[in-house]
Image 1 (cartoon, rainbow, N blue to C red):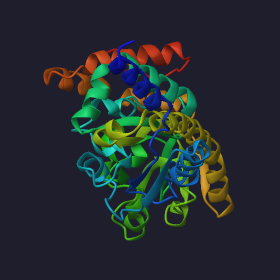
Image 2: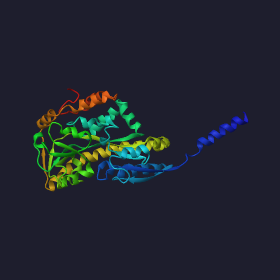
Image 3: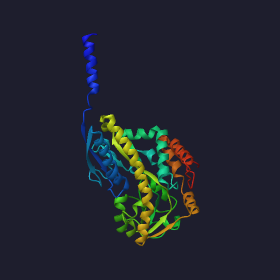
Image 4: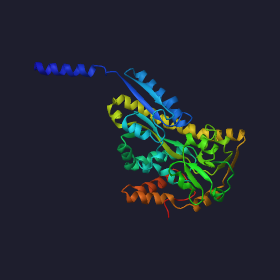
Length: 352
């Protein structure tokens, strides 16, 4: 056999037998919200330690994490840009504030009065992402990809005065976020844009008269102290955030590190969804124990409220269609996938 050929074979065998070069990665994970928010708490308490543990067990790679929560690197409106630029390699992106850059991810916010079952709704979102490639492409335009879709539990009113129907909202200033402002159309309420970290002070100073928020946030943020009336209207569980990774960072990682991160991210999504789902009722119980009054709309009242609204979903879809974005396709797919999952809406938003 040719000497050079033998040398080549031996060299290849040595290369194959050589251990993978161990690397240490330094990553920053950014969140505008504090760990009071369960999606952020799940990053701190599960995602980071679990990725670290699994890589340590493998013995090949390690990660040094810098945890930048509560706006220490970027506020809730700046996380998308922070990950895009590489200021943080990973981010908890509340995309409900990014309607211009991530329009199709707003789908649950323009289809209110759906299910309160967060886990079922997120299953629909996963299928929607697979069916509509434009969703992933919009993230790629911002130099990142979604590792885990994060939803939040059922949305209700938390107000200073009681609410028994749309007419009670007339002229009241209601704090909300993103496209949820449209849920107030038809009620003559005055929407005021804000976020969880700002709502308490806004209510205590009189800037707003109440908020539309998810039930698990009521107790941690102590909204009941300044707004003691919780009205369970059930706008539904929403897909509002995502754990993302910078695409340049992702491309630089060894396959075995990517596999660990993907596996843990999938588990993080499930754990976080379960945490939100379980925490909602507990949050309202704490509010009641502290003196808050909790009432609930009937299904007939929900349908009446929804019927009084314009078709915000179809308006949204047609506007995106005009921009060359598949709004109607996404809306129709979401409503179809929801129906297949057994989800019933108080109104079919895909029908004029």
